[in-house]
Image (cartoon, rainbow, N blue to C red; front, side, top):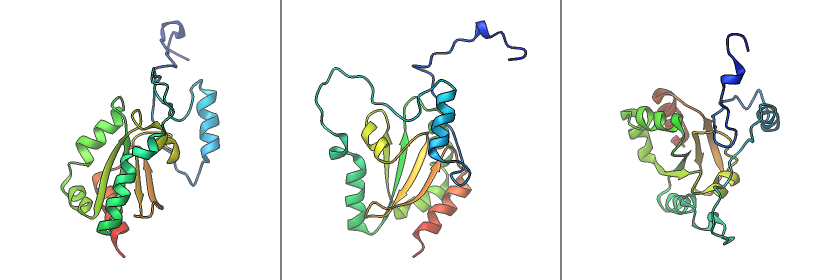
Length: 167
């Protein structure tokens, strides 16, 4: 690369992570995976290595299941926020979007659930989470109604949340 001495760049593919925002109408998930692999990374999420050898599936105790149950009892939609402790964009979303008054008001019509992708890797796989933050709106029956990968402005987000609750 011009101006950069490559021998001074420290790349740790086991640790380095990044979020990719994309327009699903312009690119397929398979082509995104291929591009990420060409860069030398592994797309998607992997469960952290653990000494626990149990084969329990985390979907049984997933917070999404509890949220769907609550949504069916209250006639609300479910907003799932897939994030991770190490995700810088997730922290920006939390600090700048979820604290906005218009978003807080719109969320009154939702059952909100945060899913840490490191704690619940199977949920992340089930919902095809490939970048973070990923926001998914589900009907009470579990049907995906909306998905946003990456950052979104409070105005765009509250508008979308309000649109989805209009029956």
